[in-house]
Length: 244
Image (cartoon, rainbow, N blue to C red):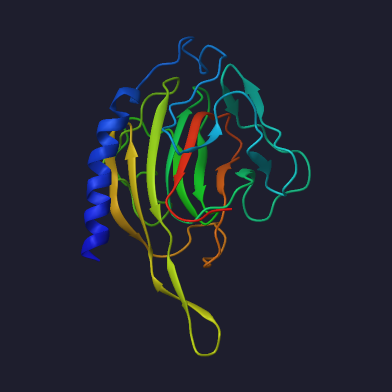
């Protein structure tokens, strides 16, 4: 356990240094997007999940073609009018993952309430809401949904590009003599929001809310469609184990 803690603590320091230049970066037009050109800060070895050019790495919740609006280097949540997905609406990666470092940038709409989220393995949600200026515990951006609020609220105002850097270690399972897999270690997560650690090596007790049940199987990264026109850009992932 000490080895795990050391890894996550070091990761926080490295990520804080690496993402500081992205924090609070305003979009050039003040309303989202960038120049319309390819945009990625992915390091060598990372899988680029979205660089502004296409949605080739994404499918809808049912496995069909991703339907979200694509413009000016970002994609925007577009409510799906077809058959509802099981549990969670949104788009997900066609690839599956276990342990990883994930970078996501997002921009909140100025009008109306805001609700979206990033589902890790389609099981654990890091919430995206407009909580700029809110007290901790009042449905904050970066909350591990209904399990733990962020240590501090780092949410920027709508219209400003924000970043999440997430280090995730999936739960560990072992097969018993009866052949059934049982969880022997909880998942752990570190989240850096706009350059500041808001969760540091936190134990994730179980799946969150509408998330899929925990399992030893890998899962996708899912961006939630909760009816708000949240924009996303510059998404990449470093898988630290085997993925498919």
